[in-house]
Length: 156
Image 1 (cartoon, rainbow, N blue to C red):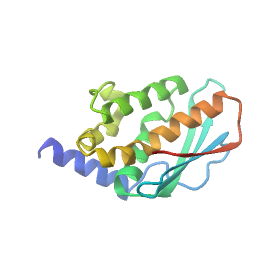
Image 2: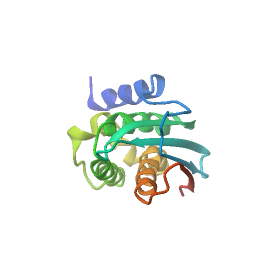
Image 3: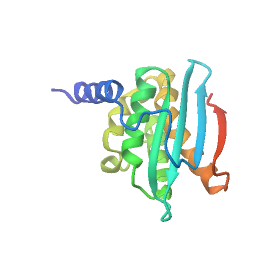
Image 4: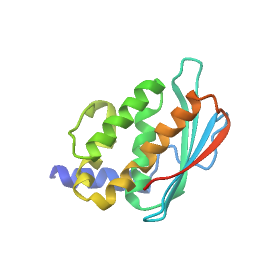
C-alpha cells in the first residue's frame, strides 16, 4: 500500500469514527467557535485544562467537509494529555506543515501527519487547519483568564 493510500485511509477513519467529537464537555473552561466562510465549515471546540496546565479534556463538534472534521479528530487525539504549551507548539508545527514548511514533530503529531498531502491543495488547507486554529485560540483564551467564555472567529 502506497503512503498516499495509507494517509487517505487514516483521514477516512477519523471522518467515519471521530475521536473526541461531541457537543459538550463537562467542566470545559473554554468554548471557541471557528468558521470558514469561504466553504461553510463550522467548528465548536471545548477545552478543559487541569491544575498542571495539561489538556484534561477536549471536544469538538461542527459541520464541514471530511478534511476539516477528520483533522479536528486527529488534533484532539494528538493533544489530549499534553501540556498546553506543548499542544500549542504542536498546532504551530501542523500549521507550518500545511503551508509546505516541512514536517516537524512527526511522532507527536500522530495521525495528523496524514494531512501533509493536503498542503498541495491550497483551497483545502484552511479546512485542515480549522480545528488546529480553534485549539490555538482556545489556549489563548484560557491563558487570558476568560474561562467559561465563548469566542467566535471567522477563519479566512
